[in-house]
Length: 382
Ligand SMILES: C[S@@+](CC[C@H](N)C(=O)[O-])C[C@H]1O[C@@H](n2cnc3c(N)ncnc32)[C@H](O)[C@@H]1O
Image (cartoon, rainbow, N blue to C red; front, side, top):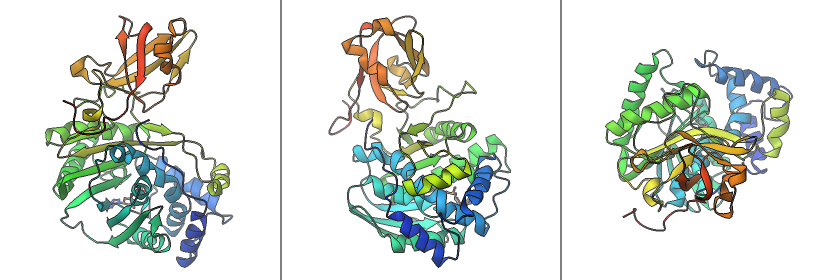
């Protein structure tokens, strides 16, 4: 993995969440009603049209108790490669559709230090009030200080980082998929005008198939508008998974819920192990992640490891311009296992590797190599 695996919120955050709930007269995560509220909210979020999303007090309470602490590590995971690349050059942040602030707190958790100067906007003022209470009670994440200001409208910037965390999923739901694509591309390119010259936009979406595929379809109009895809893609072209309806690209990190939330998840019938989301980082200027990987062929694993009798396979997404295995299912027979290709044994979704040579069945032989790539320390690839 490139960059640091995000950590779940610390146990001490339970007190912050309880205090904020009390301040706003909301039931907290340990209220006996909470599993039912969380179950009801999960049904709303899992509906493609979000038909039941009403911004009620019960829904706000469920967001504070469960979704905020669950979602903080998502943005931390989405920016981990950019942080490792030193691609985040300043800390003036716009958190668009900030809600309770999970995205900017996730960014803070991914950084080593500094002052995160955040402007948060959201259509839901009640959610922003909770974000302010959270920031007041927990103004630091490790060595990072969070200074939060709430605004009704998006100021003109310039911003070093614009976060759009699980917001597209709620926008323009009355429109057709094509209309949404166009509107969201316009919205993102519009926000890009408020970026500092080296600034970046990081978008996170739920890992559900239609929502992740929407994000992957957005790449093309964003690239046409002059933005560079920094991560996760290692190529500039069309997403190779889109022609196959059943495929979608998403992360699945081994990050569990904090212990204090596990009982709520269990009672509400939700998972507490693993963290799934999709992400896309774009910017007006390179370097992209791929520019900092030194290897003739660079591939990202976009499936889990597919283990069947006698072989292991994974779907890879690479650079079609250098004969990468762009969207292909690549394998290695167990009997072809060797010291040079043993890294195939434990490939996982999101890994960035180089491998080859591949035979006509797209398999690595005993003489082939599989290697996890690391970042070149400075400058773009020659
Ligand atoms: C699922 S929440 C995500 C909150 C937060 N960004 C995160 O990462 O967890 C989506 C947020 O988008 C906000 N939102 C929806 N439509 C919006 C709009 N047109 N403009 C600004 N915010 C909007 C909602 O009010 C909600 O707080």
